[in-house]
Length: 110
Image (tube, rainbow, N blue to C red):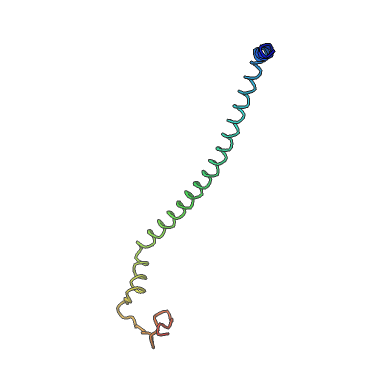
């Protein structure tokens, strides 16, 4: 009896092996495509973040270039010398702060 059932099973498998293999291949292809779509979505998000960082870096670079350009002017150099070093031009009158106040009027003695 067992031999007969086994032979019937083998015959059914031989008869239907092509559709079974085709279904397995279809499942494999579907799973692979879904995985690739998920990976592509993740990579798009990563790329968007990187592009945002690039844009921020370019804006910062432009700001720094503008600062460099402005700091090389004579007006900026004169202003920096006056504010940071306390330099004055010939003939100017210097007013010194009173009671520990700095030149901007902040009281540093407190």
